[in-house]
Length: 231
Image (cartoon, rainbow, N blue to C red; front, side, top):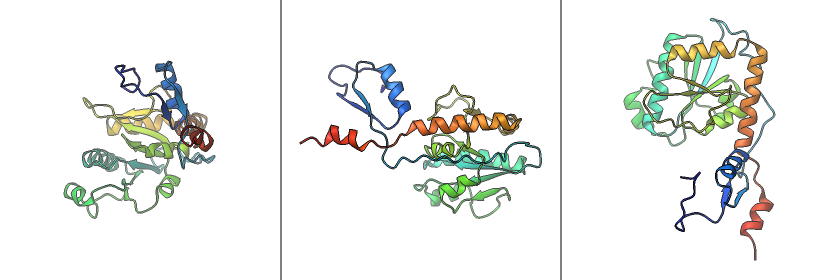
C-alpha cells in the first residue's frame, strides 16, 4: 500500500525516504505526493571493493560465503540448513554463519547444535560484521538488510529462494548482480558462472556497490532541520 494512494484522509502529507532509490521509486508511483529524501543517520559509504580473489575459480578454489539471516528462528534455520547442505557437498566453499544480535541461541541450539558435528567449512562467527565481510566473496541472505553492507564492499549477493514461499527479498530484481538460487547445485553453478572472467566479476561487484550506496544516502541535517526545527 505504500506505493498507492489510500484517500479517505489516510494519505500522509509528507513522505520521507532514507535513500535515492526509494525516493525515485515513490516519486514515480505517487507523483502528487510531497516526497523528500533526507537520507539515513550514520549511513556510511566505502570506496573499497574486495579483491578479485574469485576470478579463475576452479574446484580447488576457496570461496568464503557470509550467511546473513534475520533474527527470526524459522528464517535462521532455513539459511543454516541450506548452507550446511552446500557445505557437505562442496568442501572448498566456506560458510561464515553470522547471527543477528537478536538471535535466541537457546531456541536455535535445540534445532541445530552450534558447538558440535559441524563440518570444517562451517565457521560460527565471533567477529564483527566488518571483519566477516572483509574475508567474504559472496553473501547469502533472505530478508536481512545487512546484505547492503556486504554489497558496499563489492560482495556479490545471492538470495536463497524457497519454492512456493513468499519472496522477502529487499533488493530490486532486474540487475545482473542480483542472483537467486533454490538448490545447492544451482548455488554452485552460479558461483562458476560469475567467476568466468575477471572483467565480468568486477562489473557485478561495481553494480552491487553502486546500488547499495544509493539505497541509503548520507543524512541531510540541514534538510531535516528545515522540516522539523522551525520556530
